[in-house]
Length: 96
Picture 1 (cartoon, rainbow, N blue to C red):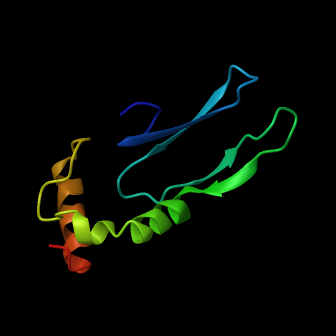
Picture 2: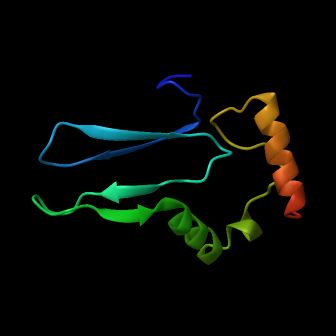
């Protein structure tokens, strides 16, 4: 637990022309965020819906057909409550 809340994944965004960066901590249970993506120097950011992109890549890549969801998830490691949540989610989708 760092950054004030527990997380499994960190999304980091930075601009080439600035030393600052932004972190978006997420747990496995949270929807991926819509994040601002910097374009050219001096231009405004554009909104990027990471969850929508992830969902589209998952469908286009047919990952449901190639991933064996009966196996434990790969790292990062999850606590027992998250493992139960993951198991119930996958069972609800018919993947376990």
